[in-house]
Amino acid sequence: MSLLGIDAGTTGCKAISFSEKGDIIASSYVEYDAVSSGHGRAELNSALVWQKILKLIRKTAWNSGNDPVTGISVSSLGEAVVPVSRNRDILGPSILNFDSRGSEYLGKLPCFQDARKLYSINGNTLANSYGLTKLLWIRDHQSSLYEKTYKFLNWGAFITFMLGSDPIIDYSLANRSLLFDLNSRNWSETLLSEAGLDREKLPEPVQAGTVCGTVSGETAAETGLPAGIPIVTGAHDQFANALGCGIIDEGQAMYGMGTFICIVPVFEKRKNPDAMISMGLNTEHHAVPGKFGTFIYGPGGVLVKWYRDTFAAAEHEAAQQQGEDVYLKLFKELPEGPSRIASLPHFTALGPPEFIDNSCGLLSGLYLNTSRGEVLKGLIEGATFSLKETVDRLPDAGIPVTSYVPAGGGSKSDVWIQLSADIMGKPFSRPRVSEAGSLGAAILAGIGTGAFSDAREGIDAMVELERPFEPDLPMHRRYEERFEKFKNLWPLMKDYLTHLNS
Image 1 (cartoon, rainbow, N blue to C red):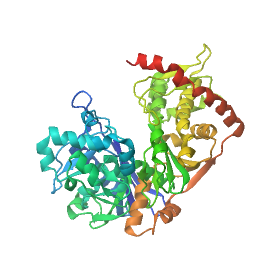
Image 2 (spheres, rainbow, N blue to C red):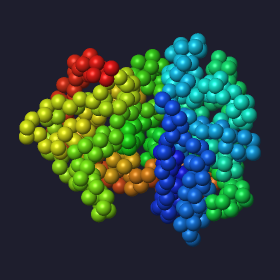
Image 3 (cartoon, helix red, strand yellow):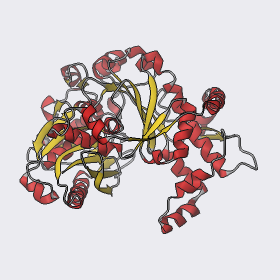
Image 4 (cartoon, rainbow, N blue to C red):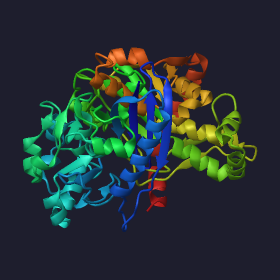
């Protein structure tokens, strides 16, 4: 018997079947590409991606062998939606959150211009990354598509719908539309009316972990899943990740170490909106009832990848040919102690508090005897310092963080986790399973099928913290001195770096 957790991202999808003790039984992964249909446009070919996900599920179900899947749930990317018909026909592509379409609406919706009012309802502030502006663009520029669409479904809801569920969405994904009321846990009539969008074209919001249908006979034949098994509502990937790390109590935070580092602290009550808005922090429903969370994020693995391709391309190619991990070699080159390199991680857009997107990266402190390992360490230190600027202000909003659980590809590196602990000055505990998104979805599947009575029982059964990383206090003090200097870099270099990017 196994629980299937699907983790659908922007460029790839993973399906893992787990035992009820959290052991991986079978795992498969598939990649797909975002498509550009013009300047500033980025979308997924929904039909093509769905066919790849079907094959992925079939492979995982087959490899589960003597442990057939008894329940399924999905963790997914947030804002993008797929238009579907009542008969489960896919009607068009899925516009991604970084697509520029819809930006023309940002100044035209009065209710959405009042940041405090919007935040009091939805817990977010207006931006073109949310589903709202994409839906408006489809309504006005693809009116025939808008009219014939039965439901616009976020990817988690889309996958479960295509497997045979009702059109259902959990609270965390619903809120990525900018149309959800956090307090009533339903679509906001105020925001829908202001936007001029139709409530009936949106799925029904429910608590994550709710059974929303069963695998149809047709889908069973396509996927190899047993017909009639429960399909359970999943969650936004960041909260599935948090659940898969065991993060459900106030004071804990998930530390996602993927392409971007994403810190997700958990709290029990909505916080002061003025403090949250001043730090650029959102408020979202957790996948666990009665809990909330927020996102602090910035470049992470994308910087390490840039370093690899720029400074170690030959080693990377050789490692690929030999089936080895080049990152193990590169991280062994990191020097002891803080790097002499000071860096600003503005190689791409940053998250809170300023959401900087008009700057460029900075490396300073270079000497003729500077090693490439020192450059790599400086990049990671700068990325972590950038996050620490917001983390250190969390107490102002009443959000405590006493410990972290890392997840994602970067969490496989002892060196990177220890460096993060030394800078943050808090303990990290690495889980046995790093694929936290799929594991979180599997826990939700277990809750929906009755294998677990609640999230805590699921965590106790499936999540195991493998190794603690305590901060080195003398090293932390050295990093605190560096951090004070780091905070002066952006104000000092802002005019110059933004001019270079103009």
